[in-house]
Image (tube, rainbow, N blue to C red; front, side, top):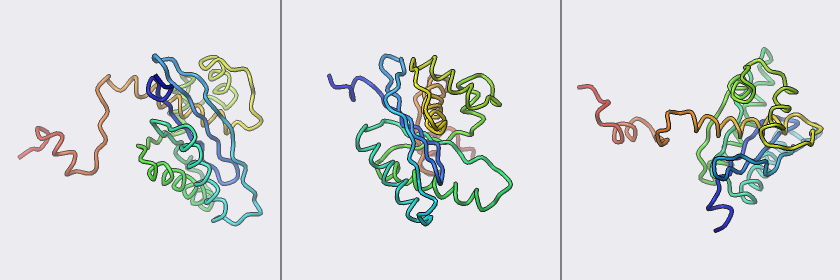
Length: 189
């Protein structure tokens, strides 16, 4: 049996306009293992649209190479700089569009939720998250850019959230009409 059929692969993305982190885990028999992690470094010299195209291409390339079953992305952190938020939102949107184009369902997690899921502390720093990931996924390397481990944390958070969501099968709703069709007893007359 091939690796794809016996296992589940989760792609996690830490969006950024200068550095985008990505991390992939493979889950076999409920045991997660590091598949790949890294960063896409974007040149500040490129215009915003060239960087967005590179983000889209990299996410598409990762999906094509690894054929993930799930896509998880970190939600932008709401800061005071509106321009930074807009740029980050565009980067996130392009990554999401690449995943949607490939037919993947998308799940978004707040930075606090990711940290809480990995370390038990929603206020943990990047170093604490990386050390916990090294223990859970049994790897020794310390990447030059923490964006890679941040993305890996998003993928692992997704796995943990799937396990803890009441054990019921997850359903994806395509709007109210679809929800009501799948849950007729929820409609009050």
